Amino acid sequence: MSQDTLSSPPSALPATDLVALKTRQQIAWSTGNYAVVGTTLQIVGEQLCESMDIRSGSTVLDVAAGNGNASLAAARRWCEVTSTDYVPSLLESGRARAQADGMSLTFQEADAENLPFADGSFDYVVSTFGVMFTPNQPQAAAEMARVCKSGGRIGLASWTPESFIGQLFKTIGKYLPPAAGVTSPSAWGTRERIETLFADTASDIIFTTREFVFRYHSPVHWIEVFRMYYGPMNKTFAALDADRQAAFTEDLLLLMEKGNRSGDGTLVLPSAYLEVVIDRR
Image (cartoon, rainbow, N blue to C red; front, side, top):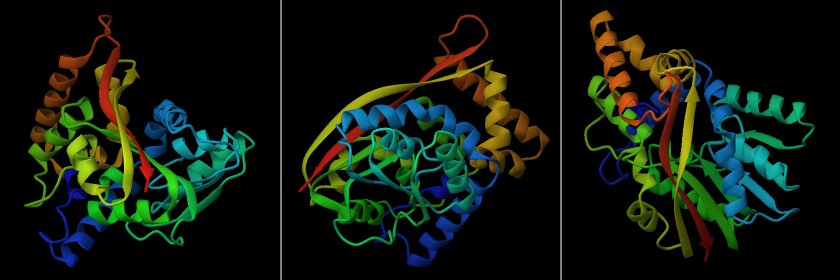
């Protein structure tokens, strides 16, 4: 996501700034078609459900679900799943995937910072590369904890600051500087931030660093796909003139060159993420 989606805690920014950040975020994620990229991340949702030891028949809430990777993974484990996002088109993509796989899920438009569910409504609450992009990070964490039952579990997958995607955020920020005082979404990919966000609601937290591997025809192919379908990248390119677009492209190619391990011209690029399983107090 672009740096416009970042924010500091509410004490550092007035509420109107948080609202403005959220509006820009929603516009960014509504641009392009994130579902094309999101579908490639399915394995992360499957792994998270296994790490959480999700049990059949449980109630599961997917927060900032995108096109439903973790939602579908939980549904395949015979859970009662509610998939939420605040971008309607992404929910429609998730619904189409569920129908194609013959699975029954509930899809509901919802703001991760103001979830429309009662306290303790779900056995499990999950988010893969979703809630980490909320403008008001403490509020989003508090909402996930609020709707999770005591004794339930919260599961997260978030890109780390040092990862390929974490460095992508920094590269985007070089061309579209973030608002002053904001907190990077990749902070969710650190132990320190998670412990701070869930200090009052967790009885135990398990941290596991994992890798997702981007596999594309070539680095240029990755740029083409992300420029067309990944809203924040689409937005960044659109904001730059031709010379700046060329410079941005060159920086992206150099970034990928550092991590590409294919050796054959294709792209095989790992990006670390932090998998977190929280036992709700």
